[in-house]
Image (cartoon, rainbow, N blue to C red; front, side, top):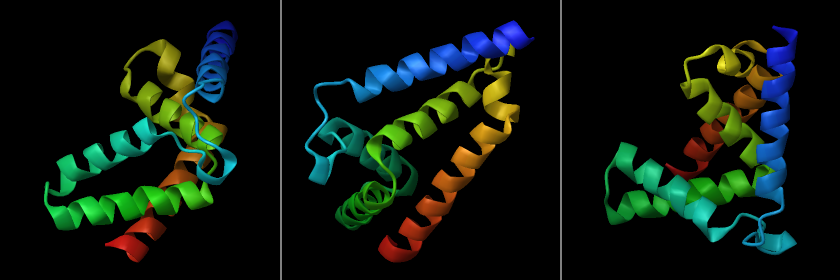
Length: 119
């Protein structure tokens, strides 16, 4: 089990490094790449309805998240969420470890704040 956890941890950091090394990232003032923002907004629109009002609210939400969480950390959080969707032994640490739970709790907290500000 320890070897498996080590493997999963390595995969996680490789994904993080690949995301951080992506040349598509923008400058420090606006470090979230456009593709990441669009992906978030499209997901938000799919859940909340595809209206011009929701487009503004969803865009506001990702802008708020980007102002609080660095893109590197956001990639880590999204990776954890994606790994949690897998149902196998390798994804168990992403569902049961304290470090993963604390990162997801932080993301949910910031998303809740963005809801209060934007919706």
